[in-house]
Image 1: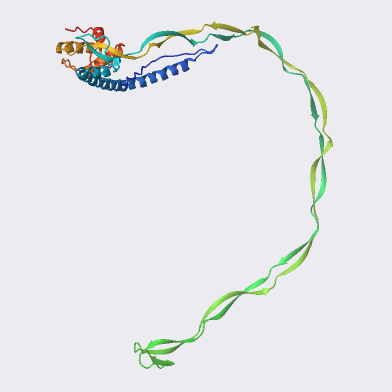
Image 2: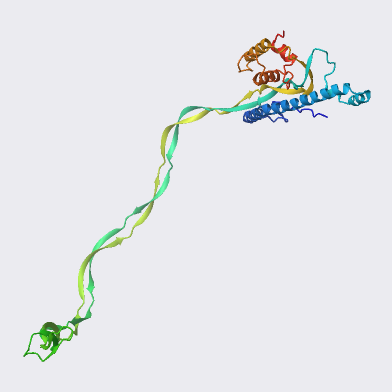
Amino acid sequence: MMKKPVFAGVLLSTVFVLAGCQTIPQSEHDQVVMQQQEEFEKKMSKKDQTHALQQQELEAQLAELKMQKQSAELQAAQPATAKLASAAVDSSLFPPNAELGYCYSRVLIPASYKTITDKVLITPASEQVTIAPAKYKNVAQRVVVKAAYEKLEIVPATYKTVNEQVITSAAHTHLETVPAVYETVVERVLDKPAHTVWKRGAGFQSSALETKIDNGTGEIMCLVEVPASYRTITKQVLKTAARTIEENHPAEYTTITKRVVDQPATTRTITVPAEYKTVMVRQVVTPEREVRKQTAAVYKDVARSEKTSETSLTWEEVLCEDNMTSQTITQLQRLLKKAGNYAGPIDGVYGPMTERAVNGYAEHNGLPTGSRLVSLKTAEHIGLRVE
């Protein structure tokens, strides 16, 4: 059995749900619409792929139909027993009530839809509450700036001047240290003691203690005495050692004049009277009040599509090859270009571009699609005059 092609219809609809007194906010409504638009665009992008797959399936079905037709013609020349076997072929593979001289093709009848308008709540009914401000008037009023109070006043103390002898330094014993005395002494000390050294000589040296010949160079070496050297140093030596002596100091006094309290300070209570001032005071004439304003709900009519019939695969009458003359195809191409479905050349050739334009026009107008030929309904709808 031949597989029937499956047609996936695309349905764009906007659905709003009202539950009790709840409504969909405007932002959420816009988000839902945008999501549905994105889904619709994705489905439309896949539509061409689906149509191509359907076209391939239909071509495979047509090829199978041709093979079955050829098989049926061969079986017609066979005995009656073979004809009875071929009667088991599914009748759906052939157009029903076919008439001689007419051409048929299996096509897709797209699903049909109807438009339903829903009344959607855009803005719910609300109550606006405003506050009417209070009204005031200015009134002169004598007010207390500073309240009366009592304060303690201090009566200062009185003083007098007296002379008094005070000790400035108590009697005490003082130990005084007498430092040591030194004197400078110049002294001559040995810097280097007398010693002998070997020096290079020439011939006999009468002053040399001893002579010898250097075996390496052949030079005469003399042992010469070097006298001692001295240097003069200056140093300090103790002349008188340090000592401690005890000194007695008597007490020391001075006379001072000082100010002493004659009568101590006292306090007394004084009453300070209140202070008043006349000021302008705002008094309430009319207190503030609530003002309530009712706002009616706002609704919007939203159209949505509802499917009324499913996509089906059926036989439809199509234009035969005899009718598809160059003049007819030229006329068809002009009509398709006028409808905005064809952008190719007007050459009177029914090629792939013209075929795609015919199927696009049929699909856009809810006419049978999927055939490589032009259905009669599509030709009548676009206004094609067939000779």
